[in-house]
Structure formats: C-alpha cells, structure tokens
Image (cartoon, rainbow over all chains, first blue to last red; front, top):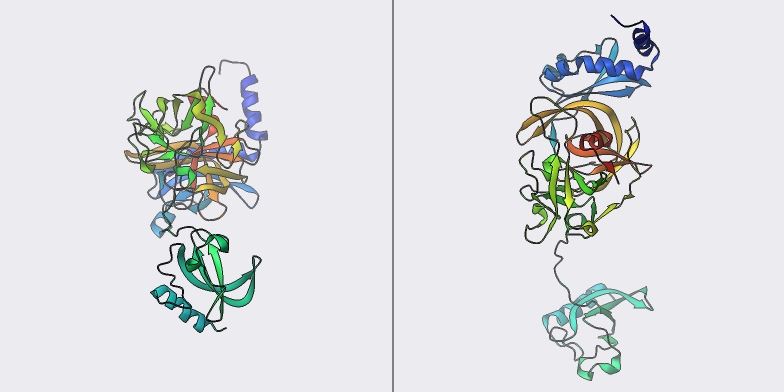
Length: 90
Length: 309
C-alpha cells in the first residue's frame, strides 16, 4: 500500500460496522458464480428467514441429486434452498 | 301452476303449434320462449309465467292484433321481455390485447417479427419520450435493427405492419450470452407523440423509480395476466434465464412471488412492476413456474440513460 492509512481505515470500518445486508451481499458475490455452475442451480439470491438475512439458492427441482450438492451455509451465512423450476424469458 | 304444465305450453309454442291462437315460432318479433317467475313491476313473484323474449317491446296498441301476446295462455300468465337478437358469444379480446390509441403501459406490443410482449411505460431523455420494454420484445433478442417497426397490438394479437405500427426501434442493451447481463431492455420512439400517454393501464401515472425492498407488495399490469399482485422475495438475485438463443446469466435482479395464482406468464414481458407508492421498481422479463424475475428499473435507467416519465 502506497497510500496513507485512511482508505484502509474506511474499508475496515465498512466491513465491521455495516449491517448484515452488506456482509451477506459480499459473501453471495464471492460464491455466486461457483454456485451457479452447480447442476440444477438456477439462481442465487438474498432473502430473509427468521428475521435474519440468508443466501437463497434457487434449484430447478428438489431431486436428491441436486439437493446433495447444495451447502447448508456459506461462510457462516445460512442457505435457504428454494425450488423455482427453470427460469425462461417471457 | 305447475312447472310441467308451463313446460308443455312452452314446447308447443316452440314447435309451432297454435296455443290460444298464437304461434310463437313464426312470430316476427319473438326470438325465444321460456319459463320463469312472473315479474310485477320488475320484481319477481313466486308465480310461474311464460316468458316471451322479443326483439323490441312495444305498447300493446302498436302491435297488430294478430301478433299481440295474450296476457295469459291456457291459464298461465305471460311476460314479455325485450331481448334484442340472441347470438353466440364470440370471445371479445381484453383491452390489453387490442389496438388502443393513445397507447399506454400494460398493452400488447412487439417487434414485427415476434409474437407479443407488453408496453412497459414511457421513459425520456433530454430530447424525446420513448416506449420502454424488453430487448426480446422490441429488438427480437439482438436480431432487430434501428428503425424496425413496433406494432401495437403485437403480431400475435392481430397487429399488422400496414396499419398498427406505433413506433420504431431506437436502441437496445445487447444481451450477452457469455458475460453477465443486468438488463433486458430496449427503447422505441413513437411516430406520433400524441399516440402514447404516460399512464399504465389499471395502475395510473407512475411517480418515478426506486430500488425494490425485500418483502414489499407490488403489482404489475401486463398483456397476458393483466393486473396482478405479488411480494418481492429477493432484491439481489443472480439467475440463469433461458432464451431462444440459449441461457444467459443476469445479476442484480428482483424476484417476485404471486400473492395468489400467478403473477406473470408468457406475453407479460416488458411490464413494469410498481410499488404501493406508484414508483416503478422492476422491468419484468422472465419467470419460472413459481416466480417472476425482473430487472431493476434503476439499472434500466442507467443502462439506457433515460428516466421514467
């Protein structure tokens, strides 16, 4: 780092004090491409369950083969599996 | 008076048999005969009556004596009801699928080479007002070229290039099969400014735009399922969506679940999803059997450098 300590301090401030939405958003961003490559996964989003933000993983169907490949949490953020069916342009 | 007796008289009349000097079948003014409760000053009683449905109800003195319907036949009272002519019910298409001028959000629209989608709303830059809808509705999934005719109603709803052209394709955000997409959006410029209004059918005037909030109630007005309501279940989704040319990945999308029944279906693409505060939140473009997916209007405005009117 060639800059002063300021940008770093601001950055740290963001991750530690911002509300959970930002955290979940960042976790989702880090993993969404990989998760979307998993067969049967149609989407990755953010929802709320029991008053807590969670990662929603949309799946084409709820076959054991698809479900077994889905993690129950990502970086300690709980995962909610949602059966969507395939998405198509309308 | 028993129903069977009335039925018998009714059938005689229908078969062309004379009952009390009257033959309903050849009567120039009678279009039908039936049985119902006798009406006294528009209120129905518990007595049965023979009902004569006529093209036109006239005062007794204006009807030739031979054509007058007696007050009662074989002791059964009669009623004369004006019914005009009976005809089979031809399905009348809903207004959403018809030609409407000035055209507005919610109506059927489409590039001349596609089936039909939905007119979202009007947007504007510093110079012009444009019709906003999807790339796959106005620009045929990147296949369209500037100036292509846009029909209202769309081709599937009977729109013809020689009489129903509302606008011309101006620009679209190209769909990227390999990278990440954010919007499926295109603009068309109306040939006549007075042929469009900033209203959305059954929703009214929009009040700008904003980002959707998780859990909020929304509605949309579209060509196929018309006015429907739903709940924002996800305001930050990355999803894979199937098109005629393959599946494309979209980031920063909103996902809506219907409050009851379905929120959208084929042909609703291009509809604007609206919040309780009449702000435009989403540009509907796809869905799964259980969900509807939409671009955020704020992203659409950024990508096309326009604002909701």
